[in-house]
Image (cartoon, rainbow, N blue to C red):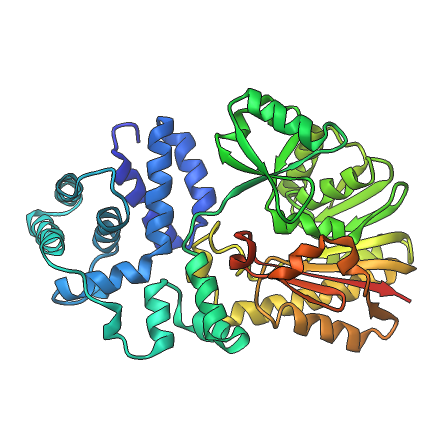
Amino acid sequence: MKQKTIRDVALDVLLQIEKNQAYSNLLLNQTVKKANLDQRDVGLLTEIVYGTVQRRDTLDFYLEPFIKKGVKKLDDWVRVLLRLSLYQMIYLDRVPDRAIVHEAVTIAKRRGHQGISGMVNGVLRNVRRQELRSFDEVKDDVNRLAIETSHPLWLVRRLVAQYGFEEARQMCLTNLEPPQVTVRVNQTKASIEEAIELLSQEGIDTVRGYLSNDALIIEKGNVTHTEAFKNGVITIQDESSMLVARALAPEEGMHVLDCCAAPGGKSTHLAEQMNDKGRVTALDLHDHKVKLIQQLCERLQLKSVAGKTMDARLAKDSFEKASFDAILVDAPCSGLGVIRRKPDIKWTKSVKDIEAIQNIQKEILTAVVPLLKPGGRLVYSTCTIDRTENEEMVQWFLDSHDDFRLDSSLSERLPQHISEKAKFEEGSLTILPHHFNTDGFFITAMIKQ
């Protein structure tokens, strides 16, 4: 691995994503550790991998006229090599085109034979010489949007049907932008002002968050290397995700259940909101994920969170009825609100996946209902923007459980200016990615009567 160039490593990673539907973020982390890369090279590798995955269908659209048999007929590694080379030529400006072509040809010679390297050379040189084809060739608006923003056609059709063309277009365009890094200040350890000062001393530029009053947006610097991070003053979390704990609004001394808790961002936020006085029982299906919750609690120095390996659908068999003051169901979902962070979601999810996950969402909600005390608050949240997983799921729940009502006070617990762009309805909030440059999120609060 050490002898390989950045493009060689990028090709390996992209092939694994293509063939094995490997998660790009996990695979990149593993690859960086193994390859022992210089920090500058890590940035370029990340940019090439994420960018190529994000722009996949757009790149294929551009390549198609230059390949006689068509892009789909190429061997996987040749197709991916052409994509990552073209991505650099179109979207990056730090490496000259001739160097990109030369390295692509070198890789093709090493991995294939003279004929393939000649074809790669010819395709990329022709791309350099000619104008890229226009999206105007695609006459249908929805098809054109899918190709231009590199989203699968089924997903664009679904977004247009649920939100209208313009809103869908804004979401698709925003999904191509790099996500901003935000951190949550652990206010059991430091105030916002103290955290800003600590980070500033370590060369990290920040501005106050817009949605959550314990959020900072990182403008420059890597926070994970700071003492503030190591000592638990801050933790990385998207701003829209921070609103979930605020929607639940736990108080000191409460016993709260977080049903799908790993890696622990919301569980620890709940604990911070209670000043670490009370109990948060944090469930997850997998042992190794419960360990992540425990590690986060250790770093943030929070003692009120107890991680437990358990399928939330079986929770009613392990806890007494009406034993929790509040319950959070941050449900497993399609993740369509976090495509910027996990671009492979676009290509690995399908309508069938959405339908299958809805059954799990229903089973979890049904299982935990008996555990909530009368008068207690249940928050259901997802990081998807699909309405069947959000509004329709809540409607199903209310129709099936007449002892619950929407919590009309939700908007009072969240900053009022969110309503400038986001959609508040009674007891619920929808934030789309383009509203505030955050993840797409859905939050509903309900009260057990």
